[in-house]
Image (cartoon, rainbow over all chains, first blue to last red; front, side, top):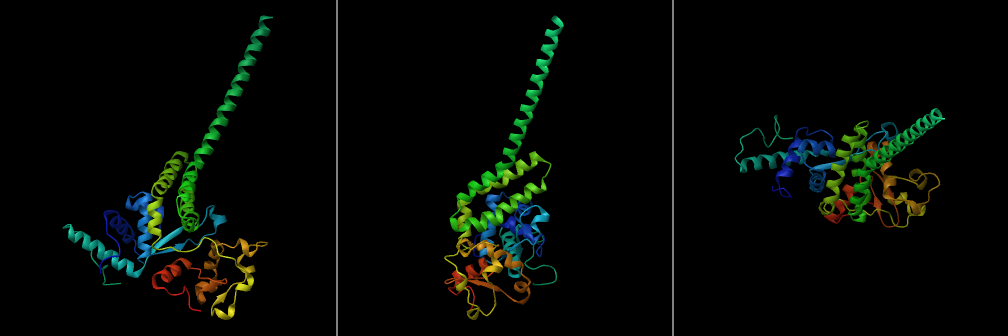
Length: 111
Length: 196
């Protein structure tokens, strides 16, 4: 199935950063550093991924007074999102003749 | 006489030095404080470029806490804090319109609820945990000050996470603590955010 948005280089960079830790909690600034994108490029991509239900947004569960800062919003890959992201990256790499290690499913089969 | 003049001159120089040092420190402190606020000022400008319905969920709940975390993480490193903070905020300022466009795909919710009254909550119509005004609003606040942000603490309510969703209802709208997702589903499928 074609993704509901175009897989641009920037989208691919974000997907790759997310797939580095598919079950992890991903924060905006950490994703900026991992993907090498600026905030203005990252957040529209996150919004599109969330709209496509590849990502879910959550509110950080912290004691704001103890932490000394407000709770942040973080993102997690949905199960379908992880599969779609791997497919999208695999297709992109195939299209550009890349023969690296991206596979449509993680080791051990489909999620 | 000459000795007094020399002493007076030295005293004058000392006074000048003290005044100069004090002014220098005040200017440095003023500059530091203003530079510390610069990323937040830029982010505030970015907020203004967002459509009103996205300002609270996007700026107040996502960008601002993220910037606060960046600032918090660089405590004691004023130059790093300034560079990282400005870098974060300025990207959002220049791309606010694109972000708004992308957000239009996923987040649809009003920034404030229309006139809400305690009478509007009707537990008999909602087969889930229903909240009263006193549980949601801070002491002394009335329903006219109720905004979507008052729903957020409900997400931490154990009954929401363990027993199922909780709802707040006014006369026209029902809100789930995960209202963003529900509103998106509603908009996509034309179904009510929750089943009554």
